[in-house]
Length: 228
Length: 381
Image (cartoon, rainbow over all chains, first blue to last red; front, side):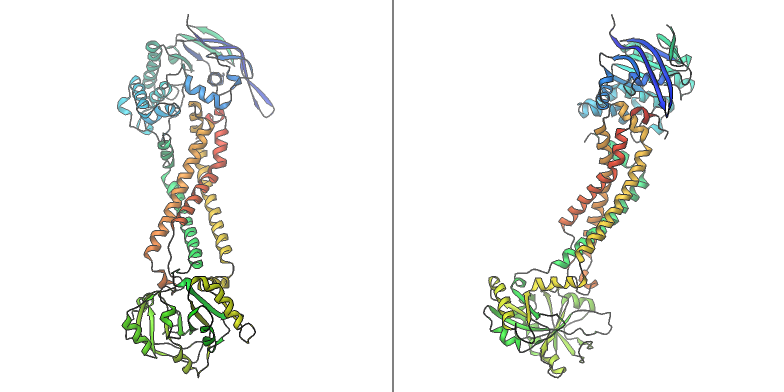
């Protein structure tokens, strides 16, 4: 039996803008097990990114229960959540979000600076991560010298370099052309199939969602259907 | 150390802005180092072992009041006095009023006893002593005007109605005045002004440093109830008293320095605020990756501190290098003998740089570190 990593019960999130309340997530019930590759599809504004942020500890729900790897995220401070994320979460953003003044190597190494690994060990981890995404020969290149697909693959390498418990990918193909999008999804699928990496993918692209084993649909903050 | 590369790379993110900020800090700390050195040099006289044995006697009321030449004999008899000479400020013009330099008429018989720290060939000393119209000049002064031994030096009296025609008999180095003065015979001047019989001050050489305070008291007691009461003090105290003539120089310099430092805090704060604002989303990413508030604070304040410290060191060390090559005595006509930016001043400027770095980045860094990750990720850059 695979380990239960994420459990949401009746999760809800309401944003408040001045006196207006905007419900973004309503009564979300979701379970994610180790090794799962789950996609969350939905139109813009459906709450996909918000849900991902809550799982990552970047945002907090307004109501409901949330347990992630047996941790009660709601009781953690911001600093505790930051440390927790460094150990357990690999985040892939839509806009790559690489640090422009660092090379591909430097960007992938960034999360490792927070660990106790020495320089040699960090180098080994980074090299391994870049090899997994097929960019060993681009290690010394800056983001501006990489294509969109390559940048996103560097971002994936950065997300997995600490060997996190799960990877959260928020619209990873949103800024990419079709060919690059396939490259990126192949990498994510490969991580799940070969290394049993748990992946939670948020996308509005059905072709990207097709790589997932289980597909959920989010509409106006509600999980409406599931398919696999 | 492992964050150093990230810190330095961020510093060079916008090179033009970094260079401009660093330059403004460098120029400002150059000014601060210069001002502090001005204060230090004005407050210090060339302390030689001989200068510690010298006292200056002047009129108690002011330096503009004269003392009778007859006082010399009485002072010479005071317990502890080894030698005493009259020193009279001539204040004449050499060719052009802009060619200012100190000129003194002195008793020459004991001049070299009192001023044992002046170095000069014995032959030149004797030539000066034996020529009533002879003069000696410091090597800095000689260099300034290109004089050589044997040259005629004509001075026009500005205070006294007498234009001495002097012959340069010797060139000295060392001494308390930075080798920037000219000395000639007091008797020659006194005859030229119809045996006026007064002087502006006396310079005493004590037998020992221990006797200096007692000598001062004895000399002043001797003339306390006379028509020309005296004030006797060490040579250093006498030099320092000139500073008070221009007001509270220390306060003035402190105010200017504070203004300069405040200005560079504003400049550095603006730079850091802009830089941090531009990187709001990046900071959010880093926090999403696991960077804690203290990491963010350390990186941002560290960046600002490295920038400000670098600028401060460029400014202070630049001042040290430049002024070590400048003949300040020539530029200031001997008023300032040396102008050396000390290691202490460089360290002070470095400390100011660190303070500027911390203060200027403190608030924007704190705000950035506290920003919620979700809000930072929504920033559009």
